Amino acid sequence: MQKISLAIHGGAGTILKEDMTPELEAAYREGLQQALDAGYAVLENGGTSVTAVKAAVIHLEDNNLFNAGKGAVFTKKGVHELDAAIMSGKNLEAGAVAGVRNIRNPVELAEEVMLHSGHVFLSGKGANDFAIKQGIKLEPDEYFYSQYRYDQWREIRDSDLYQLDHKSDKLVGLMKDKKFGTVGAVACDSEGNIAAATSTGGMTNKRFGRIGDSPMIGSGTYANNKTCAISCTGHGEIFIRAVAAYDISCLMEYKNMSLKEACEEVVLKKLPAMHGDGGLIGIDAKGNVAMIFNSAGMYRGSKSSDSSNFVAIYGDNN
Ligand code: ASP
Image 1 (spheres, rainbow, N blue to C red):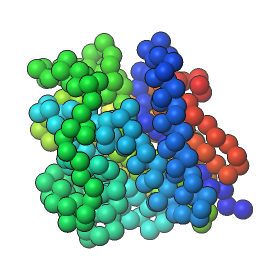
Image 2 (spheres, rainbow, N blue to C red):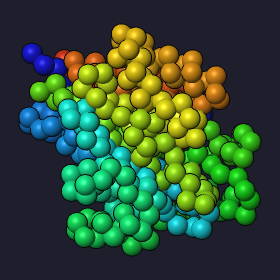
Image 3 (cartoon, rainbow, N blue to C red):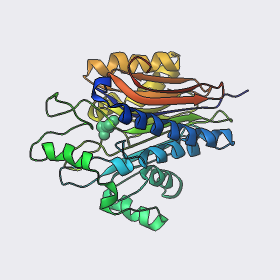
Image 4 (cartoon, helix red, strand yellow):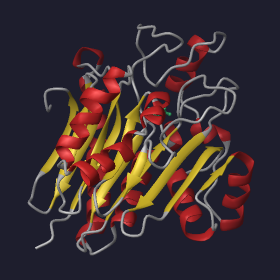
């Protein structure tokens, strides 16, 4: 029988137990579990992998612990510019948005682009106009405000530093941080169709309309029934240059690697060689899941019809 599976991530990076309070850790775990349950319920009820990844990502976008939707980071101008993508492995249809504002669930808008725009990738004001035309849910600026994100931004807003979510004292070039808070999901449904979705606020203090890998089909998000569905999190510039998600698909298609081998090749060899910190989740059409990262931790979870349910934060499967 076809195995149904779902995997999610809530970002990778220097996530260490010593930086966490028990309450915060419990809140992260609960948020991950709720998103897993929401996506998995779709699959269990015979829904498609596209609907399942969307449901899981919406949960993470609505949770302000994660850097997507409600919890998105501040840009240099003190606003929130959101990126998201969704892709169906069944027919290679894809939709993506970049730099959109006031959209409650950017993943929903990405799906709308996929289904009803006649295009794949919309950006900025045009994407917002399309959202209004399609009746997508909007929220005022205050909805995206949190003291935590504001303080993160205040620390660096007068500098040229940018920061990949959360707090750290490491300075890496112009990057102040080594933590990534993007969210994503991959799923395999009862028909053996796979899909991927990714959503992010990008980097704190980003400017000049910066766009990361998350909404770029082939870099941060990709799905193809023949190979895999992938959602990435990490230093987007490097993932773009590595064309990370599509590279995993290529390694499977042209080199016959398994999902796990291909993910390890890219995350543990190719990306580190380019100083690309981060990780990703992947799934194949048999419902196998891989969750690989080269950072200290990654918020992650998976659930399958073989009755596995897994939620972890740190490097040691905890
Ligand atoms: N990859 C995302 C970006 O570069 C950041 C992240 O994963 O948190 O926009």
